[in-house]
Image 1 (cartoon, rainbow, N blue to C red):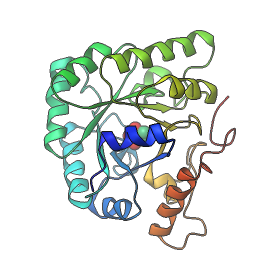
Image 2 (cartoon, helix red, strand yellow):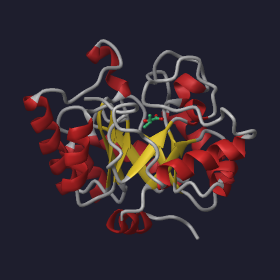
Image 3 (cartoon, rainbow, N blue to C red):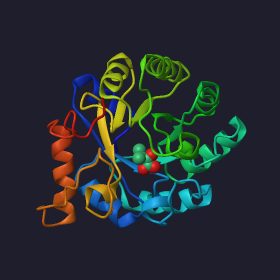
Length: 263
Ligand code: KIV
């Protein structure tokens, strides 16, 4: 049976951790489905791990659609989430148009990187019928504004601001939040306060779910980020590595506080 947003809400209520991985083609989508991964994210990280760029910025909406359609042909069970690429959020008309194109290509939810206040834009997307996951914290499309891939939300002011943004995005209609590279305590607070599922990456073991980039999990990234773990080591096969990741998330053995998270 297809995973839907209702399934994720139920998992949050029940305290069952949500498993999420990225995929960019039909073959890996099939493997992730077979391992019972709940959410497949067709991330614009494809610009880095598939295309070999240093950032996600070069990825276009046409490329997102190409990879999403391939994943949609491979996945029958997981909820499919896709990224709105760089500048897809330049105004709400563009966000609705590009978000709509992703939905037509098979997405069940569109992830929007939210720097500053994006609640009006998210509200318009939701009003147009596009389910939105709001990505907060380190939003990789802003890498040049940060001057590198840096932890976000450190210090009282920044933490309070992120908590207020998370609340505003939920009120605007976001049905899921994703927190990337934020201090563990802040991620825990946002997760406990949120009425919608919160998925973390470099965030907190207390998040309702965890996501990693597939290439980091299967040992294909030369210098993986600190919050990742190579599950291929000792696994013997790709299927076993993905199953080990799913099992570690579901049993809350991944992420380890202080090892894959930040103060
Ligand atoms: O593009 C992506 O893969 C992402 C994850 C790192 C969350 O946004």
